[in-house]
Image (cartoon, rainbow, N blue to C red; front, side):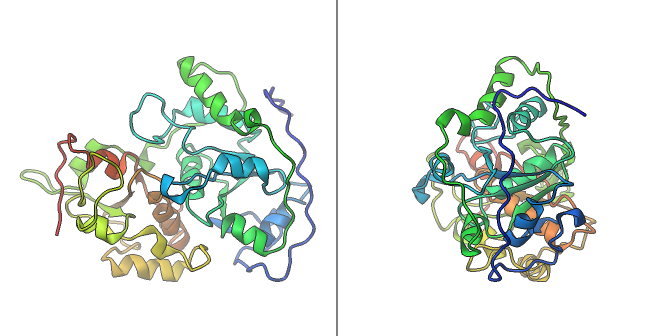
Length: 347
């Protein structure tokens, strides 16, 4: 049996009582042994956390935009799903980039997983406090680093509360909450040298750079587009009719891109819509998820809500896109920058 030395002790997961009948049933059976799908319900998670035969690791991935006036670190410290640890999608990132929350190196990601006591054979379930927002970014990060056994809690913390499931309201100190981010940062400062349990390898097919988008997604003289970018930002920003929230970033879109606002894949309770509804939403924007002849690339403002599109694709057509969509990590903050040199299209 593998033993990994962690900097912090990890409590055994508390075993919550059975979920309230009000919990929304998912297509996945409640037995943890059956395995998780792309999205799981609070009832599924409550049952899976009792399963003696399988390790389930629950990660709170709450992160918010400044305009949302919320703090994921403070919320996690105050209350969380029992046994959950905090995965900071903003801080577990590339410290050398001037762009927000860019993908970390494989060694940084692995160090964060070790600090969270996540193993390669664990089932990971991620959630956030908004319903579905930043948890999708964590889901995509795990996929990108080769960990396929990851699912999103449908409806996040609001759905857990609605189901009357238990909470852990024991105060957690700041160092514990920030442990994974600190471990990733330490590895970055040591040039990637680490000895740990979790093994991560980047799947480059799930990530796109600015140059990739420029050469693969944009038609130009002497260049034929082979991929299509799908933008998760609100349509007014995509059309260039509304200003960008970040200074120094132009309004508009990547030429030839489609617009599928991330919130169009969610219902009023911030749960993901059914696969068929998601497929129809993409189709309404001129995007056929079943057409694999042209690769689709998800983008947004900073690479967070693009991951909702990636998740939606995996949920809608799992047989064709089991890992969702590749994500343009720099997204519009990089492309739309006044000094980026990238072409911008507006209406």
